[in-house]
Length: 298
Image (cartoon, rainbow, N blue to C red):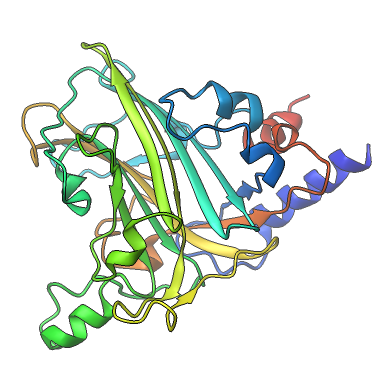
């Protein structure tokens, strides 16, 4: 079929194309969710079923992640300890990236009181990092002595962004980024929902969208440069799953896609994602990353 042939070509380009990968040779494919399909996804119901119906199989599984041995106990993947699935998508009309995650955790650490979403990294959460223009480089300057405080404030999370997202928040705000531009931390540029149920293990769901920027000027939203998300573009991105079993900031494990340390500071330590268009009437469910990989075994 012509459609399957096109997808195979897209996969081949994604794996071996000259994308100048940040880390590793694999280029992950991120499929567009059409305007019509977005209407069928409720980001605030703490239910992943609509993602399975619309987007299909999960984009990323634990096999795609590496445990950082330098963080906490360096715990590797153990489904009895922490298990997870991640869905990714993008939408050209809204210029947004979408992420959904379903996770089970034997011990759920979340003492977040609300009001400071950029601080939720210290609890069981999800970290979503984006380098929209694929430029790499340092994007966190808090520990950089060669810059003035004014320069750090201007550059912090400007040319790439790290988003921290938590599954439960008393004020309903699930995500935020640790930069100076407060306007980025609200709809229509970022939003989402989540929830958790049960204990030992706890099942958590997170559903969010963010707007990536190539250059953020905190005091000038109009002068800031949003990433132009278009089919065929390659972006840098990183996803991390921190796990805490005893107390906030006491890491049990830290899993990310590149296996690199300090991805919160250096964008060249991200992985690559190629944006694949929805193809008009073609359903996103037929284009999922997992389905394409499986097709090679049929």
